[in-house]
Image: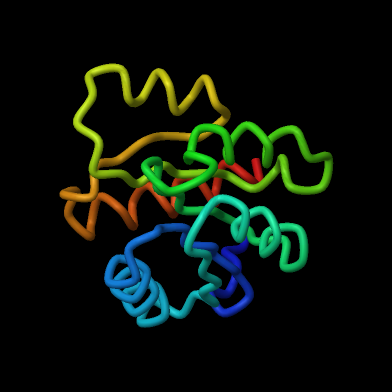
Length: 131
């Protein structure tokens, strides 16, 4: 199977912390991905509906809709449900992965995860989308 050109892959980064959005965006752009950003759940739903990202990196603790609710809403949308969602959060909760998967995410990572782990998860999630 031929790998997609990263420039053709859109990743939506959703986080209420502008520094996290900037850092994730910079790292993803360096890898050649097209980066979209949203600062909260409502904005994430709007951007996702307009841009149809290939993958979504989603924070949990945000004002308004939390990441789990955003994840459920995205997965309930016929057009957006195929986009893998990776929860990336500062939450330290033993049930985090179970809650993330229950909401429709592929996996949950803590923001302390190293870059290699984050990219490995992104690449696995993108590959699963094709398979």
